[in-house]
Image (cartoon, rainbow, N blue to C red):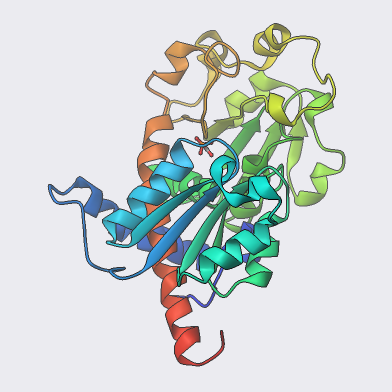
Length: 316
Ligand code: CP
């Protein structure tokens, strides 16, 4: 088994197959804790984890908080809108001041790509990227890969379709990096205006035919239209998008019996998928959320273990 040596988690591009497998295996062993009557172990007692979220979040923020609490770490949440950043303090200065209170880890979400790298370069505390701009959302991709592996017992050789607003999706990018590393075959599908130019260079196939992608996929990830990141008009209308790329029961008629319908959330029912598909027998959307807690427990545990080791060796 691979040894964990990383102090920060910024991108899945930075991880080897062995490191991803170590996270998945660690998460598998932690998953059971959340099913106990007393959902708590003392593993990270005395550690402090700070949530620094500059964008709205339900799943990621709450699952990081739960993950930290279930490992007995203390947690703090900083609401950017009521912090001193509204008085002109930079994000790095804010983070340095938080770090000066002897916190061990900062989990950051920001609308600008690269913010987690700036914090990781400027802090001794471990930094986890909880989503930066259109660039990366590594813990989402890890919980997606965990969910696929849990259902199929493997990832290598599976066909994964990623459908929707690929251009603005950090979830798509992180999943492409992670799933490719794990040996999956990926097809991205969506309107040409929402397809990044040159995406084939990441080793994925591009299709604009949703029926073909559904028929060939073992897992299908549906992505929300990221309206908040779209500065131009990329589509004639949301209705038109739903008609062509939205997944409903009729479109699933040629799907494999074991197809997994996945969605990182938040879902827009009636746009990227119909309600009967979101709640139907193919859907693993809520399993993804459950698995998000176990994945984040694993990441907190592995990163904080490395931080302790680096501190003992005088390297940070
Ligand atoms: N998948 C995801 O990042 O959801 P939230 O925005 O609710 O955290």
